[in-house]
Image (tube, rainbow over all chains, first blue to last red; front, top):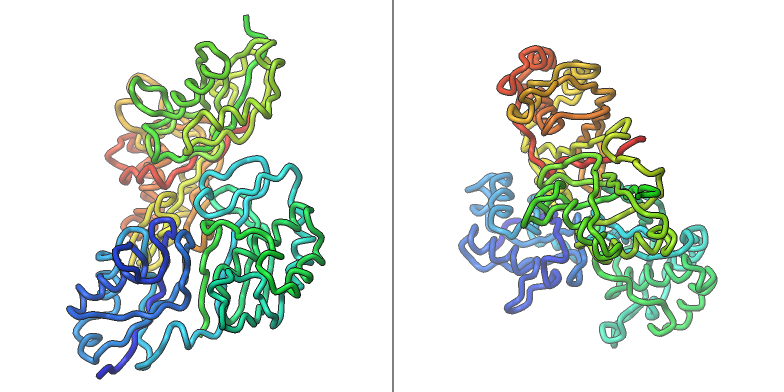
Length: 257
Length: 257
């Protein structure tokens, strides 16, 4: 019945929606995209997202796919399709790119690599322009970024990340995941300084990146030493790790296929 | 009567206020700062700002000064003073720094150099995270930034900028100003690409930077050639220049004393 798939690269302002996943009576990214697609294609459209981000989490490069019929892609230009989607979705959603893929392409199952970035603003000066895009950590002295980097190394590789996962979602499922890279670097955005935690992996557990960020901040604040992260990992217990860092500091950066 | 002055370095979200200057019955930066100071110092406080930014224009490094009495600075730590100001002003205002200066210091008259930055997002993809901090210029092909740089050079130096000034505010006053530097460069903020126009000078006419930005964009879009800027300058007539670029792309970046 379907002849091709379409992949949308979507950016969104997490604070404007109740998360990515479709929810009855809630404004969600998936829900808003599907209602816009219903208007354009004049039929029900079921989409698949590369990652189910929580409420408040931003995206620069979320990928959303759905199957289409021959005439649906030939009766309109993809450029026009993208423009219509942006016109029909709320301001907080921007479809940055639209691509035609072979039928059956899945933004979720065909993803080889996912990248997330978490932003922190340490120090006494509260962020203004970054207030909605970074977690303000009011530290008296500079964060021990060297310690945070050393701590992060313990997480690279294939491990059981049960300690970094919200218990419920772990039940019965494996909590083994492979973290390919974790990098920390300073950056300036809109004139304000922040520390970026860049995490690359194939897939992540629920709120895993936020628990990693919350735990690395414990090391940055010198409440824990870098080796503590290794202990947290072997504990396989959410209570062993640091707090779940706030959603608004996190951005789903990109997906590689 | 006064023994010292205080200089505040203030950042603000332009879209949240009716401009910088105090106005009866309007929420303005100066008005909000003065009401916070009234609460802290338990007296009327008249402040002076380094620049009177219009509604919608952001600031990273606006400087605001006011005179104080000996005991007003000795009965409290400056750190505590700054924290109280941030607690008493709206979210869209952040006092980043507080310094004690010799009495009579004026944020406006003692300023040696002012720097403004204007951000553009050219291209088909509308900005999301930069939507409130950059002017989206939906160009089919890339902006001719080389041409814009060549055009900008015509404005550097001491000139009569009457063509770049809102007529009314020019009446009777000199429209001679010195532009010390204009630089254009690409930058990435929050994952989105933009072109930054950095302008440094001693002082600027009303909406001068925005008319400069609007005129440079005419060159960037190839509607005008770089030499056109020289003609605009000699015309000494606002109608000769390009449009006034939107306020939200502009940020009052810093002041040097």
